[in-house]
Image (cartoon, rainbow, N blue to C red; front, side, top):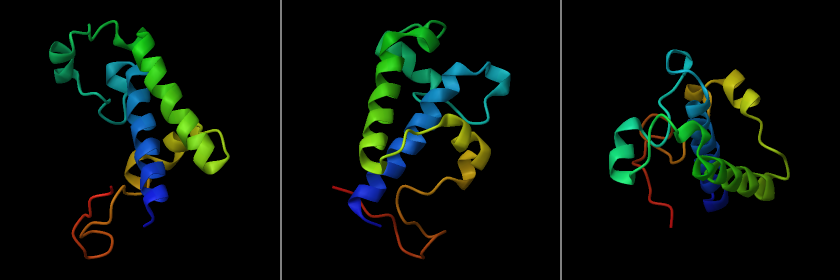
Length: 105
């Protein structure tokens, strides 16, 4: 996998996981990013996070990066239809190619 593809996949997965904060707790198909236990350390209210400007900024950054790399506007609906478990892995692992994960630098 090329570095550019690995970065694109990272941003797709990140955007998907950030978007989970926009869903009611019982309707989230995946654990949101950052995980709930991170908020104490970040000094951010977990209840206010879905409307926090920093969440919107992170989503915009990931969306803009993906769009600049792929030429397409990423759509959460498309990710949701595919399902998180069907999105491409960030790094090759024993499940996909029989090799250990490689660090992308």
